[in-house]
Length: 393
Image (tube, rainbow, N blue to C red):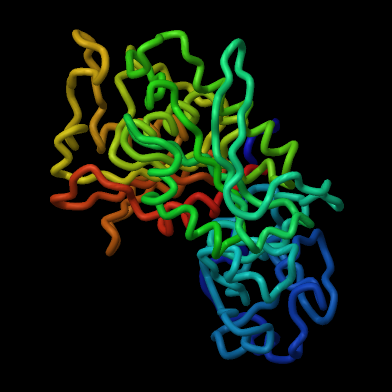
């Protein structure tokens, strides 16, 4: 799979050039014109090709309302090197978003990319046809063969799944001693799938555990990375999955499994959302992702199972074995290093989330801290909004 390319928004800081142009376009948007479609030089219906997207310059948001509700006059871009942008400082009409649903009025081909609505086009092309799904609406119990071992998982298909276009897929891993049913009940991704239309998988760990570094399956031969890869392939054979929008999430040891996939399967997974766990020291868990990927971590400062500050902890199930955690901030900084992020992380927002946004491949690294928080599931909504900003190219 190719390396992730730099994603782009659509505007350069500033200015007032060409003011008023947006208000003259009329009410046509989305598939009726090519508003927010990618372009090389020209656009239809009075739109202008600016920084590789069809839009119009503006000086205030009122000039953009004719392009549809929610369209704003925005100045917020450092253009990528492969896009030709005007030398003058210019603000553009654009559509901000936090999820694909915010772009639905533009047409089925539009998705939320880097918090801006964009036509899929060459950024994440959907197949022209999708094979008929063999999955039923609701929960589907499945197995997959990994070597000599039969592994179990559950696939959840929301009622909104029509099977006529590729949808995202997220693998949601349970905690130590947990199971798919418990994770489905508590993580929040089933409810999000109902709203957003993606597919969720809940894998089942052997011994209720995942094999991460020195821990925690009784058998040290379990290959859970191979299980995750095989599981994705099996789901892709049964449903129309967008290969550029496959993610991993989990809580506690399940979050450790999500990190394990980030370290060892970044060619498949474009982002991970991990709650109440950290990366292990390099000697315990070597981590060299093949490609940049978006990472968001949720941590509580009062977590007694995986201390926020990190350090050595006894491994469950394995007497005499120690797990050496990097800590919440150490994990945050390590992912920023692995993703070649530059500059400083942002100040924490109202959700306690701080982000490195200037990273290789247009990905981001975020740490959300809950003061006094214990071991708990992080926000599925915040996690999903972050993951879906940066799909694979």
